[in-house]
Length: 416
Image 1 (cartoon, rainbow, N blue to C red):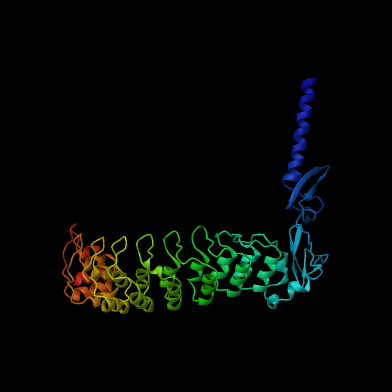
Image 2: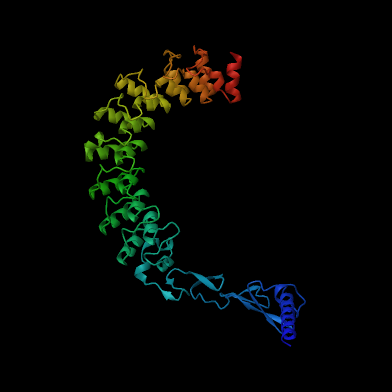
């Protein structure tokens, strides 16, 4: 009897499994003879049928329909956008809240740029982070919405909150040249020398732009011009790189010891200005500074070498005319001026050294022609060949032609 009862029970379970598989696995719609499944929900077996238990926000026999939460027009003063099991509102100016039913006080919307920054920004919690980790205060500071910056600060926004880049609102305002926002943030106690990830200060970021008023304000508030970032760059280095002579003068007049700074590679501001071809800044530095064109960095490169390998011939002429300099100096790799010019394919600089020994070799026995061929600089190779360059092997037995790979460079050595 027990064996027979067990077989009956097993048979019953098998039949139930077949029905369940047929109805809930294949999801046959007995009412419409459809093969649709429970699209957004779970199927439960019933006698002679099944039922879909829909996920929140869905409805229909097969849970195929997204319930329109905007159908009841919940946004009283704004536009409703339907989401799954929710909605969000874009409120009209002057209103806030989930259903745009709360009136924003007139004082909050009295500023002139209210139509630019919609009052819905007040819906943001003061410390809520946006997509890049910035708060409403970061956004307002970067975009120059001074009245909104002041309102947020009065409402308790954290003036020292950092975003994912480590920037505080003052960094944002300084980098974007938003003078009024800079002033307001400083008035509310923003640290003038706050560090972005222990690196850049607001003054450094301001020096990347051509807004002298922002820099004057930061200096007036006590910004330290001698602070450096992880690479050893000071605000003065950065201003010299950007070539803004008025800012370079301002920083020098504020504290002339900025001239004595060098980064971690031993590069002085003259290196930086020369490499970037900032002619007026180079002239200024040579006139007021203790610099020589033969000052070397950790790689043995001088400002004159930097100018040559960046092909700023006019700046090179200024360096040479102001100070004679060592025109035969080599860097730590044994590369002289002609080698450096050939390395970068700097044809103007190569021509500037016309008359120099084009066949002089570095510590590896390479001539300027070797270096130009290795860099695939066809015009430079052509000029050197036309002006006395000799094809010969270096210390490893390689000739310039062996280093050529591009067709136009290869063809030059095939013709010789």
